[in-house]
Image (tube, rainbow, N blue to C red; front, side, top):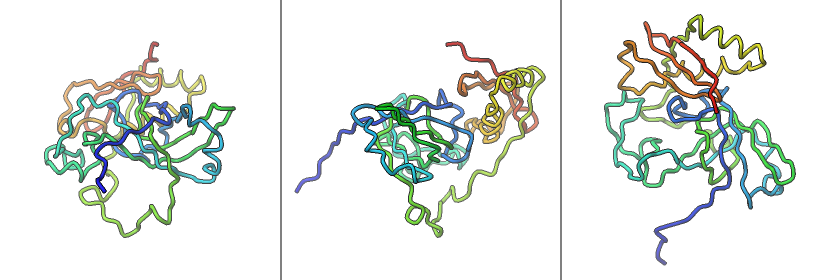
Length: 241
């Protein structure tokens, strides 16, 4: 019997995330526990009975599409950030999104399930998912099967050790205080989590200079620069719709 060469999958839901663009997204799930997202389930998969029993699991696997890749071409070799962005390895030895089939797989914390009629939302934490990401499947995380104590992670065997110090200019500190006064108590933790992981491309980490970096987190346009091994937050302006 011949093996089919092509398959077609349906989007079962869409991610609504604090990460509005690729830059700033953690390179793996679980690195930033404050990173929250909602998975909105689409019809005809928004049937409450399809999620019956999922609430007893603490974590889930989310299989998704790297929809923001600008090129449909795949590369047989890529340069992982963990190797400094200079050394090439085979794409199947990495989690790069530039794959023959641009599918990703992340394990995230299931913080809750909201069901209002056919309006079904999964609350997720510790995500590495961009806003608008199409999801093609969800599966429960099973510790006895999925956590392998003797596993070896090759060139990425340990969690990233580099943690940048975060400092705020007086302007940024004032803007943050105004947000916190209005009840936004998680923004500081999100900023600290993102910047401490050093989201810069690996090839830029040996330089600092006066370059200003920017990304959108939730509804905030965040701007910072590097100085003396620290990330200096310059401003956090509310994003205009």
